[in-house]
Amino acid sequence: MAAVDVPGLRKAAEKLTSEDGGPIVSLMNTQTAIEETRLSGLTLSVFGSGAVAAHNQALERHLQNVKGGIEKVREIATKLNAVADNWAKSDQDWVVKK
Image (tube, rainbow, N blue to C red; front, side):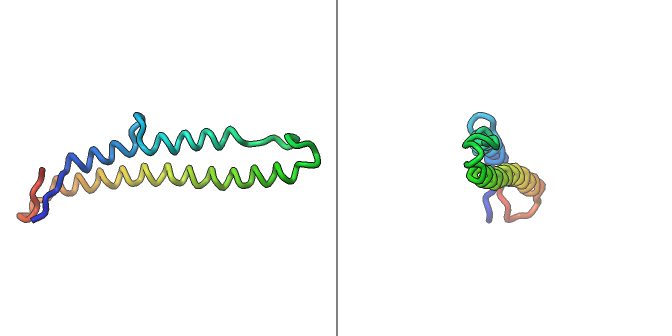
């Protein structure tokens, strides 16, 4: 027999995307912090423009990674809810729902 906690699956999905401090909040705060560190072209004078460009290029890559993480967390939450829905509909004898 398999014991399945359908409400637990739904609760886990909710916690992932909760605005009350779930992982999604940390990623969104990270995104904001990264965006705020973008430098303008003349931050280090004309002589530092290469360093500024390199900094902003690295910043963009980090920003892409964080945005991808946000998308993945939302996707995981959606899929956890789908799993919960599927288990809730299951009529198999070996499934014990909590």
